Length: 199
Image (tube, rainbow, N blue to C red; front, side, top):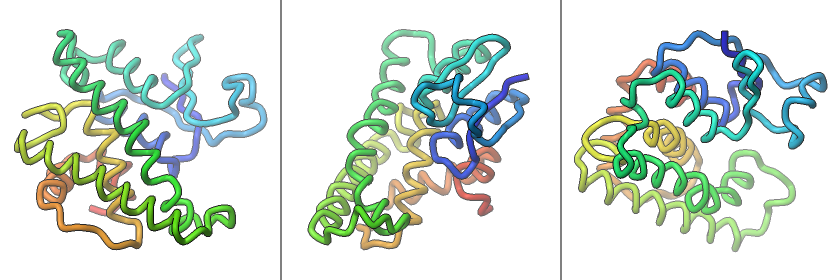
């Protein structure tokens, strides 16, 4: 059985847990403890243990699970279709995450190192601007990030949308993102791991 190391309150751990639900994969989850230090030199979660194979980095773990245990439904085999999915995954991990980090740390985590009001406002503006990019994409596809069908890109983006919606800040009305959020809420894995247990 797969072992996933990391608390299920972590957005990156929840990517992996939701992916396992979508793929119908049984797993055991353990909180990180000092005994796990040999699994990841960065001492970060999630870590996947699949038999004797150990892997870290959440998006890489999700890709591996799809490649190893899926028929291509979540992560297509065909090069261009796969690239479209991975494009949105990489955008989430780089551009979008960079945009929200300061505001989230200030407003939700209330971390003392993130108290510069101007930087908070700049981060909120960047975060809203990036979610508007996703809104435009969803308006164009009418469904999901990579096109008409749910893919691995929607797991990583769905968690980011949930974080955006849950953060107490001013947000523009983005109807395509709102409709997307409702579509994702029909999926049991999202209700459990993507929407903080809210049905």
